Image (cartoon, rainbow, N blue to C red; front, side):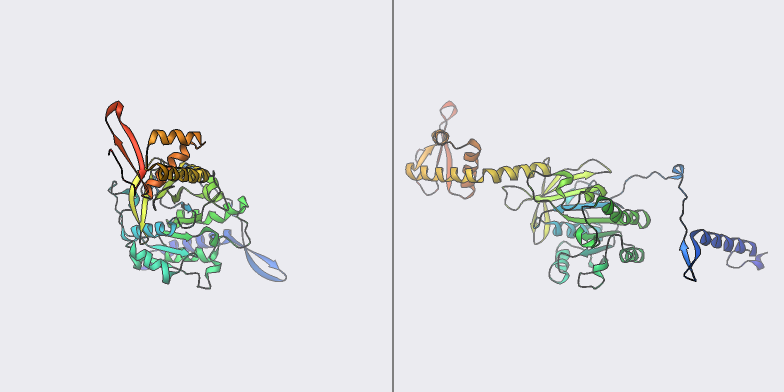
Length: 384
């Protein structure tokens, strides 16, 4: 019997295997006569899977709590808020196995280095992206890319054969798409919900089949008083298809402080908002905040609406102090009320003048007799 085996199979086993392969092929394809010529056609497959055979799994994470593996995560924000620096930082963490700044060292999380594919139509690899990735500490040997100068780039669509072939061949752990509009077919309207759902479907399939995570970079809606799924520009289906959504923005009335607000999470609770600064394109963690994107938008809208009134209040304070040298703050507030200046506008004007280093405040006395004074910085303060 051993002599009859070829490749570990007996003749009977080999014949059975050949018959099985032939049977499968016959089920998948048929032959039709088309204008006198025979051609194969794919026969519809109507089989269904049994739910009893599904293996229940716990969610796995690229960045614990923030970015799950094998699904779609969207990072959205207006121009200039740091989206590119953020995804470069994420790529650096993935390719080295190091912890993301989002965790601030609180979670003992370290993983094996991963391979990442980057598709960016926004920035030049020569002038921006390579240096930005190096600054963030990425292992460049684990980063693969196709630049927009490649003639194939225009065929790189979410539902296209080119992307499918690249993922099948390279089997990356994660793919970055920046921005989403560059990978939607030219003839597809992003407002067409059915078409957009079908466009994103292959990315979900790549997660299931090849264990590939997709990170999509999107632009944010600049309209005031818009948040949640409406914040993502062009198509709300981007939000719907994503397992996690991170909104990036600038903290109103701050000096370069930015935020990452976790707005959607299908596989866990929403994480705290991370505040950060950028230094040479590298995100530097500052603190966590309970505020979400909605609160920052409302605060920014309020500041913009109050800007003319605050500027008027600022001029009022400067004129008053130029005339009186120094004043008790209580008296200044009463005069501002007479002039019709609101408390919010006056408060903002005082804060702006302090930030501009134009005014000085101090107190005199103790307890019930304590009084607060304000003056211009270049005036002599008495009784201080």
